[in-house]
Structure formats: structure tokens, C-alpha cells
Length: 193
Image (cartoon, rainbow, N blue to C red; front, top):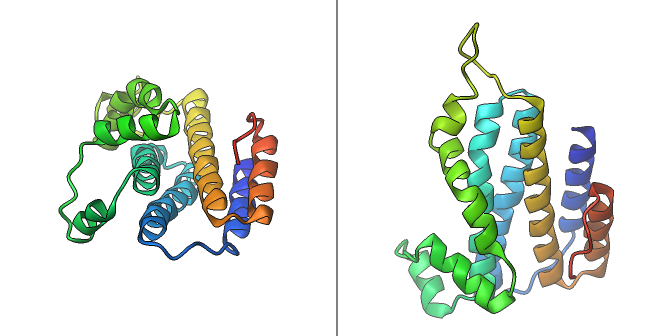
């Protein structure tokens, strides 16, 4: 946990000093990325407090905010941003994922396919949550170490991706270098910055 918190602080410090272009697209995408970074911090805090149900409930929120930030930055147009501002943006999540893949060539649909059902269950008190609250002796937190480690790894991974996007948008080489340092510390292969 200490390593995750240290990496989060290093990313936050690097991002605190970036300057972003003042375009509608950047402001909307960055708002989603800001939400992601808040979820990143919140999940780590909840894990530290051993509030595992609440921590895991935020995983879908983290993933969704990341995808929406990507979509608004790489795929949206002025009409989409106007709809969002009027609280009438209704594009299905699967369409966001598909359009990002077409634009960026990444493999978000595989992540969504593998994770989505579990993320929904964790967020909406499904079997994925309830089964981890029951043991032979009691009802309460019964999350095993492997699951907790998976939550931490998922959170670190998407926090790192979000920080990389913000550093990329800002074109701030110092922030990009800081993201790459955290990436190496976490043992991930090179991000394309």
C-alpha cells in the first residue's frame, strides 16, 4: 500500500503543475480525468481503511471516467460537448469504447468484455460484493488478499493511464517523465508518451 500511495503522490505532484490547452475538448476530457484521479485516491484510502466493499464499488466509476475522458478527447465534436453541458449526452458506453478503439487502435473492448460484469456487480451490490461479505462465522468484510491486491493493481493501472493522458495533453515533458518513472516503479511496460 505504501508503494501505491507514494506513486499516487508522485503523479499528483507532477500533474499539479501542468498547463492544459483551454479548449472545450480538453476541459471536458480533463474533468473526467480529474474525477479518475479522485477515485484513484479514494480507492487507495478506502483500502487502507479496510473498507473493501466501498473501494471495489468505485472501480467501475474509475474505469467509466477514464473511458469517457478518452472519448471526449479523441472522438467528440462540439455537438457532443454541447449535449453534455445540457445534461442530454446519451451515447451508450459500448459505443464510446468502440469509437475509441477505431480512433486510437487500443483494445478497450477486451478490457470491457473481461471486466464489465464484475465491475457492475461490485458497484451495484451484486454477487461479486455479497459473496465477499459471507463467511462461515459472520457477515462482514471477507475479502481475500488476492482480491485486495487485484483492486490495488487495477486502481494503479488506470490511475497511471489517466496521468499519462493528462501529461500527454499538456505536452509537459517533466510531467511525462514523472509518469514514466511511476510506470517503471510499478513494473509496467512503456506507455506511448
